[in-house]
Length: 124
Image 1: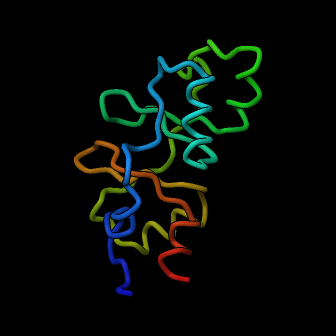
Image 2: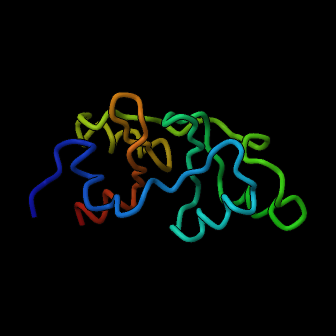
């Protein structure tokens, strides 16, 4: 297997469906279903193709049962780090040492989400 050299090389093959993400106007209960269906620990919150923050599954789970109609934009957390699709894979690896996930972008628009698990799959 060839070694991935850029962020997009790592994302290719993992973008089967659109990016697992939520819009600020997405109800918390819906965002939780999206995250769980994808096996994500957190999802970026995207508005007009750009990440405006993130929300983690623990937060969604704690709110969904009693406040499922609450909107993601009301519980928004800080954004996940972003890298351009042409960023070296080593830069992605460096970010993943400090953050649980990285959003890969093209011209500022979110393409995919990478985790340390993705890197481990690429380089067992």
